[in-house]
Length: 187
View 1 (cartoon, rainbow, N blue to C red):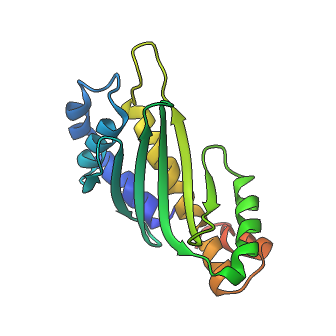
View 2 (view 1 turned 135 degrees about the vertical axis):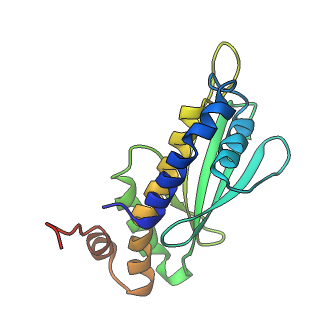
View 3 (view 1 turned 90 degrees about the vertical axis):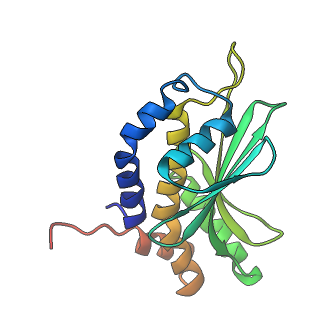
């Protein structure tokens, strides 16, 4: 079952696919990672802001919350980090349960992971791409789409788990079971 935020993202992606084909025709082979993401977000109609040559920040309204999307390029390592921050803060007394929950969620992921920043209690989804090639580091359109789609889909999928954990006082196992119940049949 897809949530409205993922469906909204896919609809936006489909609508703008033709426009993106034109805009990315020259860039299809890849370009500087932050440049590619900036063009990709622009083609989707999302505002974004650059913080120097190596960081880009945008946002996306999902079905559960507004997500901050942040890309950070590390030239010396040829690594692009992509973060999605779903505006979930965990109080100190719930952090042990949140860490357990994140561990259980991460066992189910193939690309990226959730983490909890100890200093702020902020939950985020993060993954990275190593972009090394003979021609130099470049991000393709397909890679950009994969980075963004994976982050949004996983945040939308697991956001309710954190809500059950933090607001319904469920155990990590109960929160996951309650949030990931799929309805059987048709209504």
